[in-house]
Image 1 (spheres, one colour):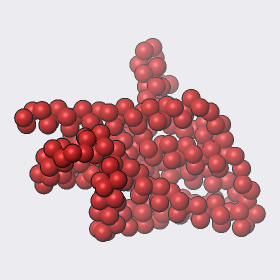
Image 2 (cartoon, helix red, strand yellow; image 1 turned 120 degrees about the horizontal axis):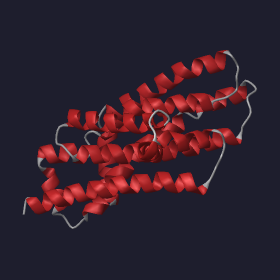
Image 3 (cartoon, helix red, strand yellow; image 1 turned 30 degrees about the vertical axis):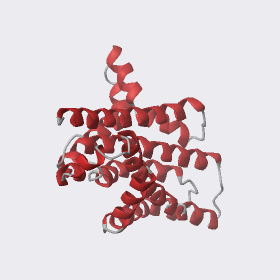
Image 4 (cartoon, helix red, strand yellow; image 1 turned 90 degrees about the vertical axis):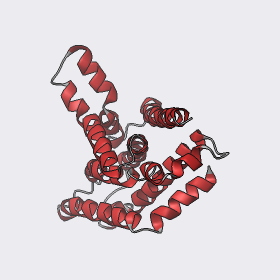
Length: 234
């Protein structure tokens, strides 16, 4: 697993992709952070919510090639027939994408640091917001990895990932419109409902387990997709 992890991390940083995505993410975050700084609200959590929305566009691009490229180049066959298990391969690739995401997130610490320098305060809401953001990123990336496993076309992987994430982003709002079982189902898949709790500084075990379970389910589905393809190829 570690060999696959470091191989994927190097592939990110040996190409312009990681630098472009990190730079774009920080630029967009800075744009939305600017009003917070100007009006001296001292609250970075509103910017964190906006950062979550930016991930709808960043994560599909970050994960689009993680499995689709192997399938297109024919190297997937070598991977699934190697001594490394499919689970180790998928988890290793997931962790590589998540590692880039963690670096991206860590660089945003400069924004609350600026607020602190201008008289802002360090609050549990900020801690909870970042914990929720890291968990939200894990679920987003697991969905992106799953989308990448479904096709060898990276553009198609981006579209599948983005549409899936958008539905889950809007699920909470849609649940208030519909009723009955549909409302309960949409409420269950709503990633943002639980993220809002973190953003308010409400730290509970249940939402943490929910996010981790959500990510685990999509990684499991990814493994099943690859295993099915392996057996179909004989």
